[in-house]
Image 1 (tube, rainbow, N blue to C red):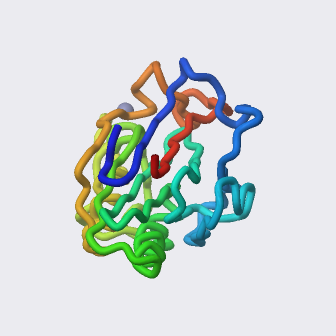
Image 2 (image 1 turned 60 degrees about the horizontal axis):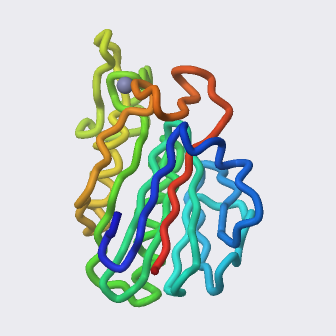
Length: 199
Ligand SMILES: [Zn+2]
């Protein structure tokens, strides 16, 4: 899909395990559930670094996030600065979304918009101590009525705090969807990808 200056793709199960995709020049981070952001200054730069978000203003530099329940978030600004964020609960609690937006603004981004890919939804994400880590606005309930983290709500909340509007949500729960990998629901070790770039 087109998200302002960015082109965004989300893969699914049918596309295979994106950990194994060979021979591509891209920046695929070694995701560590933190809030570190890398600035990519050439296609393929910073590949494999320990970080959970990448931003770039370089045309054609592909930013790749791998997920199997965590939220892949694409960011774009009309100034031609784009970003890709891996937002699991630890990263959200650590502020990875706001850190990525701040780094984009340092590169000249003004109005930033966001898109959310397939991720686990509250009905499938029991999180007993959610109140220890997150504000009430992002607490949810599982299908069985247990405390849950509402990951899409947590992403929206973090974006709003950074002054960013979520303009697109794929609306897919990875745990419910047979077309996506889910670590929690099925113990999948494979990963789907989000790819963000300036075409
Ligand atoms: Zn679900």
